[in-house]
Amino acid sequence: MLLATGMIGSPTIMMEKVPNGQESLLACRHIAEHLGRPLSAIYPIETGGINSLLPLASACILGLPVMDVDAMGRAFPEFQMTTFYLDGINASPFAIVDEHANAALVEAQDSMKAEKLARAVAVKMGGAAAFAGYPVTVDQARV
Image (cartoon, rainbow, N blue to C red; front, side):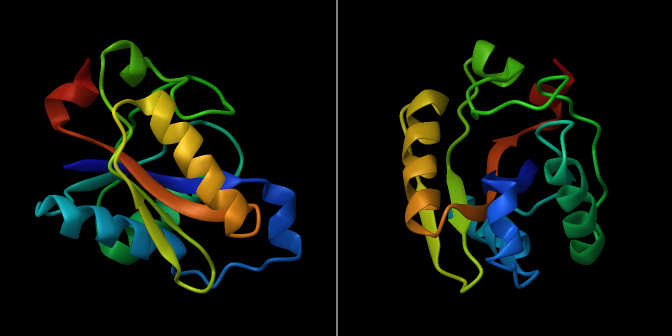
């Protein structure tokens, strides 16, 4: 299973709400445990800011390769704004983890609803958190 990870919320909030460095790793582990499948690779969901770099660091720590799965071609503000959405691939299950290791798992009917629920959770977590979502197979990522 390939999995995207990164940050949800406002990057500027991280100047006041410093991450502990484990959020992304915990989010990835929550998804793998929830699905009962091992992670085979991490991929960045977008080519923008911290969401380009956090997956690289997470994959390094987890000892996993990073896949070049460009689901958008640029930075984007909402998780349904990907080519995966056009193919009917759901962003959920979607894990959100804050700097205190508080975690939430979103199971939604589609990526649009996953975005709305995950965003609301991130707001309640102080406006910024790490995520893991869009679990895909290698075949789905190739499309």
